[in-house]
Length: 426
Image 1 (cartoon, rainbow, N blue to C red):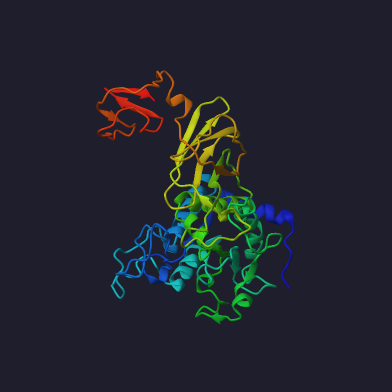
Image 2 (cartoon, rainbow, N blue to C red):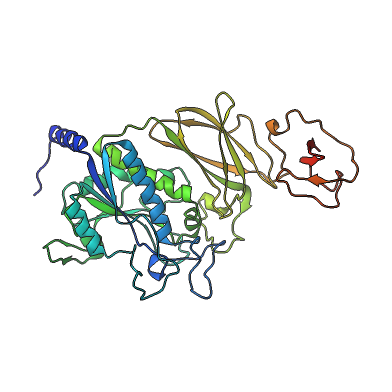
């Protein structure tokens, strides 16, 4: 039977560890762009016929795991109470060649990683992954695995770490940013031996199932979501979406060690097209009860204003069918989101308020409305509107692209154009 550690002892342990800096070892699962890195097709990055894998911008667990891990580690280091060591900080090599001498340069062996954890003397270990089942399955939820059985963690405090970090990780799912098909009111925290119904003992006498957990540091392996759930896989193409998962791990770790000193927060939003189904998209099988049943909005300009009406950030949603936008390191207070995109009505003013609090991310799901895009009001300040046609001439759009053979007439959409070096509102 394990001994119960009374709160005053935990407090003293945390105080001593803080003074010495808490050593956290971070393992970004996998490590290259090969077939073992769980490559999967997405709308913008299909499988290439010559390799059977997407290019390196496509979905590889190597990429997404690394983005999460680096953000978590960066935040831990910035906190000042932690020292961080990584199993890797890069992907590669490229191009991947099976059997090459450098094939496993970053996709290191699990036994090597676990030995390094003990040699360094880590106070905590975290291995970051995403999960998989059959492709296109409508299943999505997290899983935490520590070394041991469901009844006992073989490295004390591993289960306690899982329990502290679980609420942080699941924030986005509970905010309807992606569906959580199981464990909405419970946890999915398991001992690896009971989960896999198997175990083995290494040469040091350490028993468990997952090779990367065959060490004596408390910690766990996280499967943050199912990348076989296709809309979540498209979200994971957005680096900022992955960075936010890394921040949630960081906040959970800081919560556990009680050394959370952040004074700022973040905003993460997700844009869908109002009442427009995503069913026409390939590789996008969506859970019908989720917001994923609606079309994600690509290429939308998102502006963030503070309570004084000052622009504090601008974000362009990508073309990867996720509609994600993120603003980082914001002072607590009231903010307002403004939206503009081709084929959508411009939304501005104070119709989308968001309140930011320290140590948290504020989540905002917004529907885009189809219609004619117009400039933001401050983009047309000082311009003289023209309602009647003008003569032929050198006409450019705001990006500097020449509009050949056109004059300002009913054939052109309303907007701002450049004629003779001057901005004209039409």
